[in-house]
Length: 426
Ligand code: S3P
Image: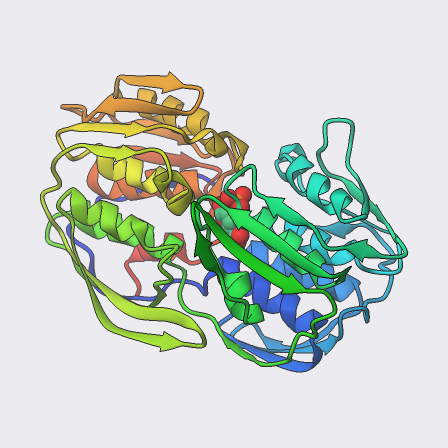
């Protein structure tokens, strides 16, 4: 499906974004390994969390109700059945990496893989620490999926200093730690999203230059009610849309504001965006609030490098679109992780920006450009990557003549995205 994006005269009204994708995955996984029935309110019904749910169903987990109000019958840490077929994680890195942390603790063999994009992404980052814990997990010769996991007698705790800033890797180790003998400790230089820790009731402490979290082997997971807030990474697209399209004033309701996720707001405010938080509250262990955005004249340089990269890793595509309108320099560095996402996002962004007439320098770890004087109409290749399709889709609200190819990939995280863009229904 290709979408010709209509220009917007101004976004108005109240918007809802899907339930947070990261929290939805974790709520499904933790409910499945809890002993008893959990309830998940506002679980995202996007394709990625559905991949997690499908894998759990193949492992013998029963669910009832809709994603809006889902009951999950947990079977305890070791209550899964051996799946009859390969577990299909679809496009979802979170599904394959987090679920692998649980599968290595089971008493049966399993194989998990995904689509073409997921099967190209690096899995050594979980294979290595899980093997250090005693797991029997094998990828292809390039350390990519399919991953085959064989049962082992026991796993043991490790102390692991994270070589990459990755919440998926951290979470895989913590989940495997539930199955290990002893106390598993993870040390991060940059604190990445900490939803797993919060949901498991673990506390993170800062010691010299590390964030440290530990989990006890055998710790049972309690069944509970999870209330999933709206996804700030989805809201980011609407924040930039309302900022760059004149005459906009919108409210995005009930968005997760976990401090490891809110740097996108700080960065937009630093280039002049008019964004305010209303009705901030705690809900189910996570900060939540409403976000109000008025259109604004963006200005200045937009620089994302160093530790900031991990804090906005999913928002860099849409922040780059904001960077087209500041009249300054947009520079993204230290971001080679972007090449390992659903697409090579550095390549995807650079080639699409060039198609729009921007003069862009590409680096191994990022790119830089000056806000172009003129942006030309262009056909945008999404590379089947949801965040690339949505970022350039937002640009099309402000710049005429933008067509997005293979636009259906937004289903991965934001199924009603094009409804908002095309019909302004909200
Ligand atoms: C996620 C962590 C991030 C992020 C992804 C979701 C998570 O990935 O990009 O969309 O839910 O833990 P990395 O851990 O690979 O940085």
